[in-house]
Structures are given as structure tokens and as C-alpha cells.
Amino acid sequence: MNTYGTSAEQRNRHILTFMSEAVEETTPDDLVDIYARKSVKLAGRRGELSPNAQIQRGRDWASWNKLRVRHVWQDTLSASKDVKRPDYEKALLALANGEIKTLWCYKLDRFSRKGALAVLNVLEHLGETGARIIFGEDGLDSSDPNHRRMIMWKAEDARDESLRISQRVTDTKAWQRDHGEWVTGKTPYGLVADEARHLVPDTRPAIPGAPEGPTRARVAQSIFVLAALGLSLRAITRALHRYGIPSPTGKPAWAANTVYRIITNPAYSGWQVHCVGKQRGVIYVTAKGKRVRVGEPLVSDDRRKRAVRALKGHSKPKAPYAGKAAHLLTGLTQCTCGRSAPMSSTSYTCTTALDSGATCENPASVFRPPLEKYVVECWLARLTNADAEDPLLAAVASRWAALTKPNETAELAEAIAVLKSAEAIIERLLRDRRAGLYEGPAARFFEPAYEEVMADYNAASLAVRKHGGSGVDISFLLDEESAREAWEDADTSLRRDLLRLAIDRVIITRAGSGNDQRKFNGDTRVTIKWAG
Image (cartoon, rainbow, N blue to C red; front, side):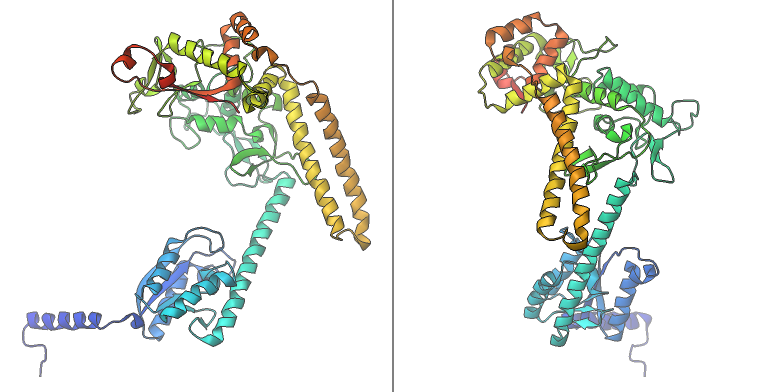
């Protein structure tokens, strides 16, 4: 007898009804989710540890245990660092909410590398709901009391292995840096790494398809030359764009921040660099306080330092050049939108008003004479009324020293860096000696190491006394009468430098309606960002 009836329509209706009833009868006990995480590429185990291989193992396990795979969760983030793993959190949430009773994971180290305590916290919450986690390759079930101790051991093993890998990577990179190898994959623009991982000039054409044009190395050198002459970041980017030289990313327009990173990167002078916190391009110093060469210099130390000083407003160009700033506040003024506000006609104006492609909801524009007068009066009042402990004065003194004694200032900064490094090494040596690391046969290693670092310490101390003893005199800026006299006697170039000793930015706002539009009010339309 045909139980589905005689027509195809009736048979299809019966099949759909049966499938609907089967789905409705499925409970969380019948479901399993799979969690997979991308693994490091270990030789000989790539196929086994790949996410796809993990997922297939999970599906096989579900089939053998007559469970239906409800969802596959997958992350490509570390299981040891304090980072958010979205799918990991969602998988645990599905367990906690009772959507499923089983979560399958390939191995415990795919689940977590934070140690036994982190895994225990997860299992404690699951025990209250009756849910469980299966670690397939380990053969462990979190709902089995006999497996609990082994899960804790495996979790600690995974954490230990993660720490060992991290330490090996750290030690390897430190060795490479100490031996002058470029560690990171991406090299600075204009430089490439040779087979020995040393930086050499990039001889590829800067303009694709134009082999007769400048090389990328030559473009990088030109950036330092333009900066040393006093061109602003914006002027340099415009020049690069005008000559059709694409940026390091291949885009037609260069970003000012890209040019800034090039100029401030000591790798162009052949020095090994690394990151310290959020500060990039810091000269790397070994445990003995020595700098390391990472390749041949593309520009000399002297040229790079001149470019950095000029870029930061700490020195004047030695000769006139085309495009030299002719106005007092050029480079200081900024609109509230964050864009610069250079001179246009008779006013300092937000660049969005000059560039049709940019947008600003309230582009500011201020007539030059009253704005400059207001800023100068604020500058005089701030300096001549500053307390002796005001951080501004320390910044002014430092910038005046860099302006008037650039070579001594640079040498002092280098000596201080070496001195601090030597102090740290001495402290570590003495701490290790107190801890007993130089007892017995190891005692012979202490004296040579101590004598070497003390020699560096004494040389750096002598350099600090030599270059830091004379100091600078800024008393003429702290008295109103002498400060006004210095201002009146200075030309525009020196006045620009004097302002920049104390001022980092002048932010202008758009005029309001009514009287605010007819008469300039500096207190409401200008915000000055002071140094220090």
C-alpha cells in the first residue's frame, strides 16, 4: 500500500510534514557546536591543525555519537593573549543559554592557552547547566569527574608551551637585532632587505613603468633634503604628488604622516630600530648599551638630524628657498576640524575652503592682522607671567638650546640615552650577583662585564657633564621689556622661531553671527596649545 497517496503533491506534503516534525522534536541534548581556531603552521602537522581539518574531525565525532551539528564557530586570534575572540565568546554563550548541551573542540590548546585557572572558571559555570565541552584529540570530557584533573594538567601544559614559544620568538628577534638583521617583514620606503636581512638602497623605479626616472631610494633621499631646507610636510607631499611619484602604498597622494615617519626613522642612517610602547623608529641599543648597524646609510646622521630639527621648528634653514613661509603663524594655525589653516589672501583659512575635495562643517577663517597681534600678546603674557616651576619654561629652554646649540643638544640626548642604558645594566648585574647567579665557576664572568659597563657609564657621564653643563639663558624672554625688545629687533623668521618655543598649535574657530562676525574676539575664537 502506498502511504503517501497517489499524487506527487500529496507525497511532497507528507515529506514536508515529516521533516517539520523531526526538526521540532530536536532538543539541545541532540545538538553539538564545533569550535575551531587557526593554529600556528607546525611542520608535518599543517593538515591536522588547520581549521578545516579540525571541523571535519568534529563532524565525524558528532556522527559517531548521533548528534547533529548546529553551528561551527571559528576564530583566527591568539588563545593566550588578552584579546577578544568573538566566536569563542558566542560558543560559550550558546552553552550558557542552553541552546546546546555539547561543544566540541579539537584540542584543549585550541580552546585556551591561558592556563588551568582560566579553563576552570569556564567549567565551573558549565557544571551548573549540565553542559559539557569535548576535547576530541585529547579524549577528554568536561562532564566526566575523572577527566577534570587531566584537563587542568593539559591547560597548564598549553600555557607553558605558549610561554616557551613566545620566549623563543623574543630571543630570536633580540639575536637578529643584535647582529644587524632587519626583523620586521616590511622595510622602510626606499630600502630593501638583502639575503642577509641587511637594509640596502631600493633601486626600483619610483614611478612604475618609468625606468629612466628616479629610484625609490633617490626619492627617500630627496625627502630629507627638502625637509632640511625647511619645507613643511604638506609642501613635501605636494611636491611628490606634482612629480607623479606614488606613495609607498601605491596611491597617487602622499600622507603627511607617511613623510613624517620617513624623516624621523633612524633606519635611513643605517641604525637598527625597534618600537618602545607607542613610539616607533627608536634606535635600538643592545644590553651593553651599543647601537647596531642594520645596513648602509641612505642619508648621513647629520642630514637626518637637520631634517628632523627643521621639521619640528627647532632650526632655521641656512639659505632662502622657494616657498619659504612668509607669515608669522604659517604651520601653527589649525581649524577646529583638525586640518591646517594656512594663509589665503588676507586671512588664515581652513584648508577645506581651498580644497574642493575636503569637507568641514564649520571652516574657520580669521583676518591675519588681529589674529597675529592676539597670539603675540598671549605669548608675551604667558612667558612673562610664568612661575619658576612652570613646565612651559622647561620646554622653552629645551627648544632654545636645540635652536641655538643644535649639535650640543643632539650629543647630550645621545649621552643621556647611553647613561640610562648603562645604569640599567649595572643594576641588573648587581641584582643577579645578590641572587647568587655569579657564585662558583660563574664568578669569573662578573668582573669583566662590570668593568665594561662601568667604562660606558663613566664615558657617558663625562659627555653629559660636557654638553649639559653650560645650559641656556632664556631670562630675556621672562621680562616683559626685554622680551618686547627682542621681538621688535627680530625679523619674521626669528619671530616665527620665538613663537614656536612656547606654542605648539593655534586653533581657530569660525565666526558666529551678529557682533561676533563684525569684530574679532580672540578669547572666544582662538585656543592656544602651549608647549610642555
